[in-house]
Amino acid sequence: MSDDTLDHGSSIRSATEEDFDRVLDIDRHSFSAPWIHSFFKSALDDIFLVFEKETEIAGYLIACVCYDLEKAVILRIAVHPDHRGKGIAKELIRRCLDILTESNIKIVELDVELIQREAIRLYEKFGFRIANVIVFPSGTPGDEETFYVMRLELP
Ligand SMILES: CC(C)(COP(=O)(O)OP(=O)(O)OC[C@H]1O[C@@H](n2cnc3c(N)ncnc32)[C@H](O)[C@@H]1OP(=O)(O)O)[C@@H](O)C(=O)NCCC(=O)NCCS
Image 1 (cartoon, rainbow, N blue to C red):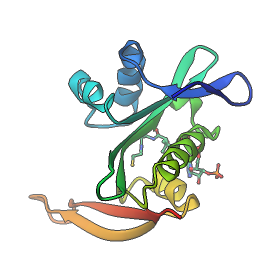
Image 2 (image 1 turned 90 degrees about the vertical axis):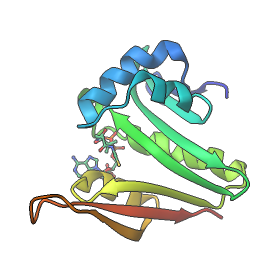
Image 3 (image 1 turned 30 degrees about the horizontal axis):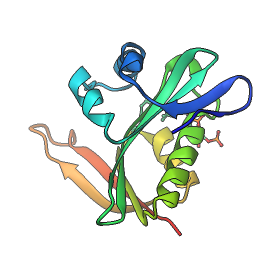
């Protein structure tokens, strides 16, 4: 995919292995269970977009596509804490959905933990709706982990 310049010296492009130091750093700042290098390496075979502001990567999105089923799953999206609240996640999702629409994908799904309210709001803005609820029991009552499976149908 070629670069596509956005406003204010920003662009979204496909990731390369040279981006991994920064992507791993953003991941560590964003998730309690960060991914390891090899997970990101495998993701280079999928849709793996980075948002670059000036020359610094501010966020990334990874989605895998099953062309046979006309279905995609957004696996990971994160924006560095210093760059949140500026519309970067929205730009990454918009670009991803454009790519999926062009590829004739009809269904996009993702998992989001119930407590990630800002992420849920973000996905709802694009029309994602809760399709399923998954509860992972824990040893402690009231300490279960609840996830939503959110789904979007593309035209
Ligand atoms: C979720 C995340 C990717 C959002 O990135 P972002 O670039 O700050 O998001 P945007 O600026 O594009 O905001 C998009 C929408 O998300 C929602 N949102 C973002 N930050 C929010 C906050 N702090 N509180 C409430 N809603 C918020 C809003 O609906 C916002 O739309 P609006 O600006 O029109 O109100 C970022 O907070 C992050 O990396 N979090 C940690 C990792 C994570 O939770 N990933 C999602 C896993 S499912």
